Length: 208
Image 1 (cartoon, one colour):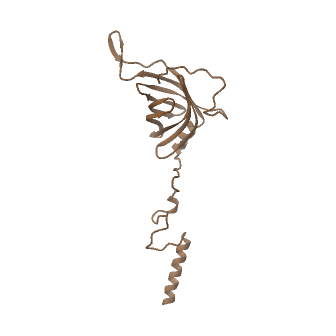
Image 2: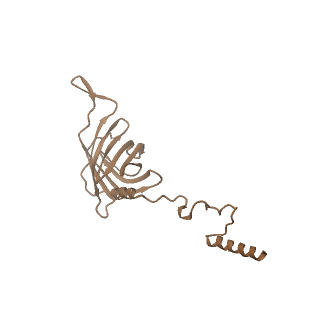
Image 3: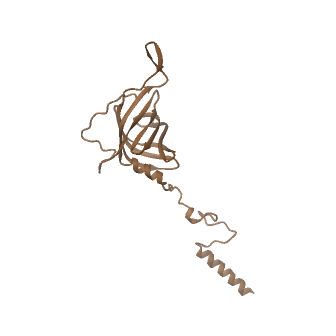
């Protein structure tokens, strides 16, 4: 009887070792492991999750691309007076803007960082822009909420990326407006931080 018990104990120990480590029922699992969670589901700490197909498509659409289009603005919270009648202030004439995107990376949850050269009015800066990406079905919406952008100011925005185009709204401290344009892939070797030797000035208002 004692030999049978020893034999059963030996088989049990061998099974534990073959399963991936010396662990006895009734004792806590080894540090960093979970007895209830399969090994395939345990990721290393701090590792970002894999991108979903729609996130991969969003990244591919923007990375190494140039967003070229126009923007319009209006002063917020005031009315323009025309012919003695007050009416909401209208939008300005369209002005050119350009965003050269070098890298797009996801951090945690809805948070992303877009490294871009931003050109409008008299502004021309290359910065990492922290954004959130929300989804309208499978359509990404780049979202900023009172985000401070070095060299530019503090802005909120909602920008839809769809089928090679971008369009959205933006708001600053006292001004807001709309923006839209096309998404074009960069030429090989071109980067967001590289400024061309000659370039046409980007017209616009310095208020934005």
